[in-house]
Each structure stands twice: as C-alpha cells, then as structure tokens.
Length: 197
Image (cartoon, rainbow, N blue to C red; front, side, top):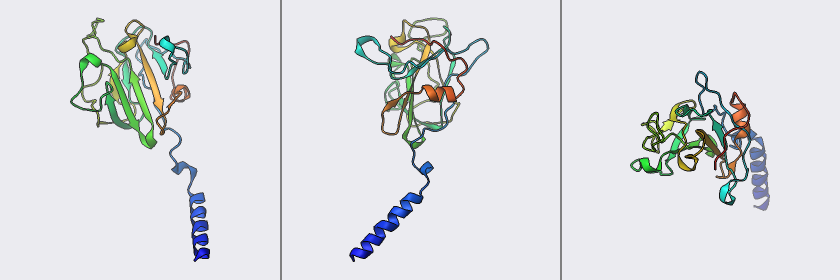
C-alpha cells in the first residue's frame, strides 16, 4: 500500500512538471495603450509609481496626461468584464456625484483601473458631466481597445491638468507598477507626466 502511494505521488509530480509554465496565469495579458491619440494630442507619462503624494500616501499608478485636453478617449487595456463603476459593483448605483472611475477584471485575475475620468459638461469645469460611456456597467464585457470613457480631472485631480490615472493589480490583488506595460503597449510620448495631488 505504501509503495502504491509513493508511486502515485511520483506520477503526480511528473505530471505537474510536464504542465507548461504558460498554463500558470502569472503574466498579464497583452495590453493596449489606454488612451487613444487624436490629431495634435500626444501623451505625457513617466514612471511615478511609488512617488510621494499628499497626506503621506504613495502613488499607486501612472498618470497619463493629454496636454490640457479633456475628452480624449479612454479604452479598455485588454478584454475583460467591468467590475466597478465609481467603486460600486451595483449596476443600479451609478451616482453621477461620484463620477468617474472604472475597474475592469481581465484574464488570469488581472485588474485595471481608470481614474479621473471627465465629470464636466463640454467646455466647462462644472462637475455635472458623466465621462463614462453609457453601456459601461458592472458585469458588462468589454474588448481590448473599446472606447469606455473620456480623460478628465475628476476626484482629487479637480485642480490639476486633465489626465488618466491608470492602475494595475496582479492576480493576488496587489497593486503593481503599470509603467512597463504602458511602454510595451506603444505609449508614444514618454516624458514628464502630470501629477496627482
């Protein structure tokens, strides 16, 4: 009996060793750049992950600036399912007063978040807009490159230049630096980016 158990364990260990490493979801999917270029609008971003912020915080994302232009399209960085809109997972709780944030779950347990989306009516800074596409609700499936929102200055970025704060979480839920993923996705103007307060 003991020999049978030993042989079974050895067989299982051999089987596990034969599983290709790619079967383990440790690497993020191939991302697309989350901001879409427009004529005359380039991007500015730099690796500010971990930089000091007000109140003793550290920066847990990368800010992508659009050189003072609001309304630049934000797209899903990979295929996935919308997890939160304005930090709510309830499709009926899309309160405009809390605009504007989206989080999306992706293959392998990865998650992206898109923060400081536009909350102003066109041509104003009134805080009365909704910078998220109407179809974007918790539970909705989106595709890589699909238009989901617009760049703005909502939340604690109200007194800064318009930009997208982009976050990436790994399968354990840990926030990780998205900078290399942005560079690999073809960010076209790597330089000094805007700064969250």
